[in-house]
Image 1 (cartoon, rainbow over the protein chains, first blue to last red):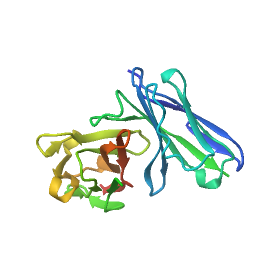
Image 2: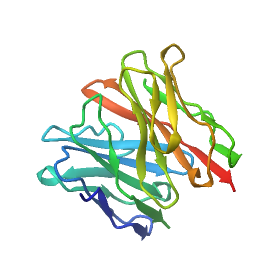
Image 3: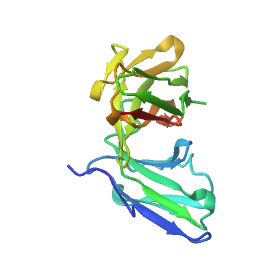
Image 4: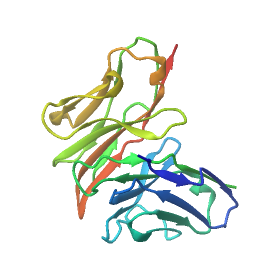
Length: 116
Length: 115
């Protein structure tokens, strides 16, 4: 079946602009994760959605970052008033159950964000 | 707090050399352990995982990893690397936190295999 998809694949924006990044998880997966991948920094957890529960936002670096997940499927990560340090690859992953100790995540191709 | 440490950020090997990538974690409770791989231009994908049972886990493409609980380690090994193993490798630990289980990733190790 189809994997996790993300759009756009690349986004170049000017400092101070808002951006929206989209993630379509694997159909039937209840859990959805957003990560940020910066050079040499590994994967930084941002936010986690599990079904209809309140999202775990503990990884969001500032209040300029927000995310929503509509209808338990598609998710949008929004970054307001972008800064140059926001430049990174933003990865989305989904898993079948989430919140489980056997949770295997399936990753999308990522969105490369460049803030000029 | 839960953390994952990968000792080598960059590794360069010749083909047929043996590989061992270190991974240590800090968490005292029950953990589940993963290695993910990202080949150039491709998605992150699961290489192997340990949940319980035999601490020596075999994954795809001849990779294996050994969970040593007393050392809080889950090192990745391959006896003979190939040029096609050039990729970035991430160790990850899933453990129980407030509100449920969370997966934490290490910083990654970039492997370059010379043909």
